[in-house]
Image (cartoon, rainbow, N blue to C red; front, top):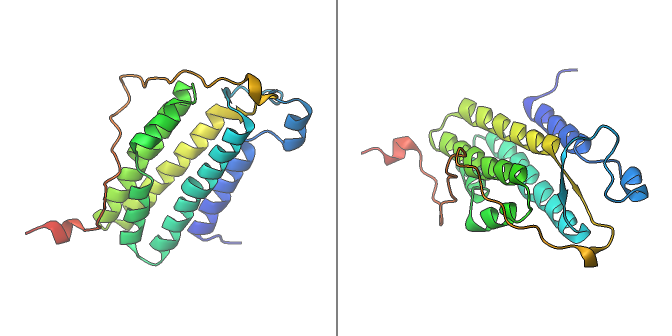
Length: 193
C-alpha cells in the first residue's frame, strides 16, 4: 500500500502523540507516577492546566500543521505562511512556556514557535514548496522531541499546587523570531523592484 506524503505525516504525528503520553488506566491508578522506564522530565501542572495545554497543542499546533499540509496540497503558500506566522513566537508564548518550571519545555517551545514556524513562513514566502516541506518536517521532529523529553501529569490535589518559578532560557538559545502583527503575505519576487 503506497501512502501519500500527507497521510504519512499525519500517521507519524499521531504515533508521536500517542506514544508521548502514559496510558490513561495507569495514570488513573497512580496519579503522578511515571510508567516503568519513563525517564522524561516531569512537568507538574494541575489537571485543568494540563487539559488546556494538551488541547492547545492538539488544536493549535497539530491542527495548524494539518491545515498547512492541506494548503500546501492546494499550492496555497500564502495560507501556509499565514498559519505559520500565527503560530510564531509572541510575548504570550514566552510567558506561557517559561511559567511551566522546566527549561527543557521552555527551550523546546521557543524552538517550535520561535524558529520552526518562522522558517516555514519564510520558505512559503520564497515560494519553495520543497523547503516548506523540509521545514514542516523539522517542526514535526520538534514536536516529537518535546513529547520524548517531557511528560505532564496533574497533581492529585490541586489545592496543594503552586506554580513553579519562571525559568530563563540558556544563553545559547537563538533569539526567537516573533509573530509579525497584521501579517500580509508577499513573495520575494513581489517585493523585488
